[in-house]
Length: 169
Image (cartoon, rainbow, N blue to C red; front, top):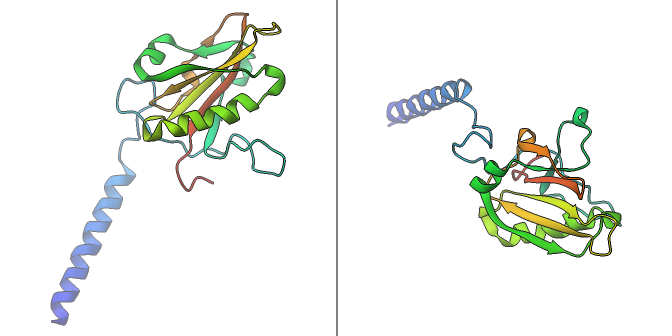
């Protein structure tokens, strides 16, 4: 009986070694704007902390255009939007003066969509007008910074938020 158990153990160890060797050279997941299988989460830091008095956005990571672009007004590429759109824009009566309250509230809209919602994007419309408000759009793929494009002067981009993988540090 002992040789049989030893043989089984050797087979399992060999299979595990082969699996790890294949994984090391495996192709990484495609970027979110490649038109291939969507990524479901990111391993980034939380968008905001969970300190007392804060507006915690712990299950999402903030995504923004590259810092060197220095954009105030931005949105996502329309082709990407069309391909990954779930719902929205969801109207929220918050101004840029209440930032990040809109992002804090939008996470619950994304959570309510279940596993389909992988990210959301926010922007402020009618800035410094009595009608200023936040818009929130949900997507079925994570937002890659490369899909941001410059927006119009009437809006302020408030960021994209990608769902974090469980166990992200």
